[in-house]
Image (cartoon, rainbow, N blue to C red; front, side, top):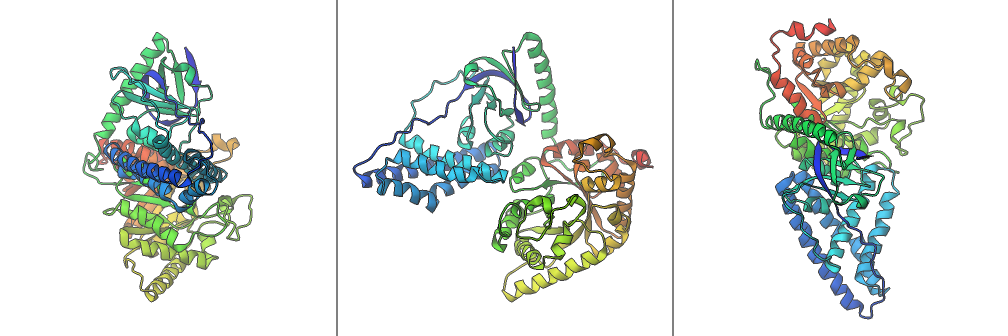
Length: 552
């Protein structure tokens, strides 16, 4: 028995035989062609067939995963038809008289290198998409010989150096039970597809996987563990764990479509907490009732100039269109010196979490602020938008934001651009100061959102990133919950709704307490939505005193 370790990116346990899949295409020939026109025709025909294949992959993906996950193959078609990509390939053929196979691979590698050099993890992952598109074209130009078909009765775990999205979705045989690779990223489209397909997956295993081809194996997707040739006792233990996991997952899946209502009839909205468009599919697959908090900070960081209004508008429209019948709360830019935004004058600080950040930055950069507000208002026509103000500490900040929104509306009307008139404006309660004056804040805001991560940090005066203080960090501290209780009481007395986000919102252990407090909405990371819903449906809030006893 041999144990290997990597990074688990899709939970679950798979028990079966490893089947190594080789997708290497290093033997791309390079030679000079005499008839460049004929070679160009060959490339264009291959590109056309590749486009048809990608469309078929999209149609196939839609049968197994949501449309949001499937859209990657539509993106691949856009890459294939991208003018820069096409022009570079055709220049290699026409002017340098190189063969189509080499021109495609060489072009893809050069573009991929540019993306791989970027610091942003999401953008780095686009390098694999470019190589995937190139491989799709190369499959037409250099078709592989058909591989032997696996016995459909034997569960198979696909092992590979790296898997691309098109390969992941192509493995749809009924006996496929998991993936293990040497390379990959948790945020890659391949990992997202594996999670959506419900297949346990482990990436970044250091040992070569080819030598284990055909051997029995166990994949533990939660702990990032791969066991080769497991002994009898280990196999028996993992079969028990697998059965328990499957039973739990089935119980959670059975709740999809059911109302988030307690046993005694109390309703709570379970919405998603996401920080990029990549989370939309997972949120919908886990039955999210809209978006309780969408942090769009990723579009502002790691770039030399601020994102244009049109670019921001399209991001906001995308998430609003994904939840056309539900409320979507989008947080204003919460930027600090940690976020790498050189186009704003944000000096380095010893403690940026408590410094020049959030609403404080927006108040001093009006044009930047106005651009985001105009983008949000323009996008509001696509759904039910609410705007959340980060790091609010007094009502003057809220009143300033309201005036600035009215200025943005005037500019849009002058340009003849449409927007919704009834966009709600809410305050993020992140500090004890905001919690203590929440009665005043609720008077001038339409709703409040409690950010439990920041509120806990500031209440306990503990930096969550400081490992030396880990022992003192108490997420269930009475002081934190008494502040949350105060905010809920002040909000409900004024007819305003309360959303809770952060780690506490995702903790099923705390869910009954939030129900007892009358929290109207929980913003939960998609992977925890069904776990929280299970607790909601099993809870009876009739005896509120008992549920709230721990904070008295």
